[in-house]
Length: 186
Image 1: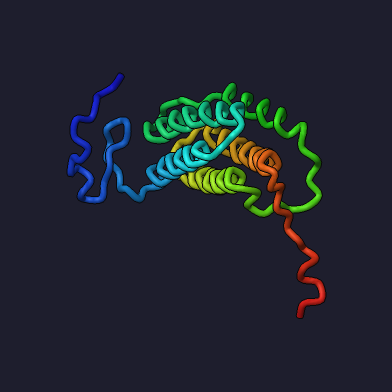
Image 2: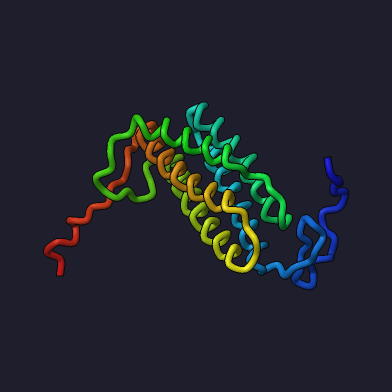
């Protein structure tokens, strides 16, 4: 285990900089800090989702994902570090396929909602998409392993499927976009 923090504030960031995991200092609004900060935000959204009433298997999967997101944040915070691997992405795909197998095919767009857990899962999905975009932005000027981007891409797909599962499990059902509501309006 690394160093324990005995004091939370250090004052070293008062100038608008922060330390990366390798000790280098960068601006707090750098693409790297933005990327791993949004991964941290995503992890918090999943924590909020876990505070809702969830089936035990879904909660277990989300807890595993939280640990992987913490690993991913570390990978992004330490340039050149590897913490997410192809096996992690393969596992997400297997979980996604398992949950998606029992869902009816999509015929309409789904709006965020479907009960508290479903809505929280949709929020996590949208933050995941933002994290993915920010990691892609980082990759335009710094080295980023493709596994990081692929993991977030697959995770957002899984969160979409889990939102569908949770909406159905809650009894609220999925909220379908009613495209025909605009016909004749004018």
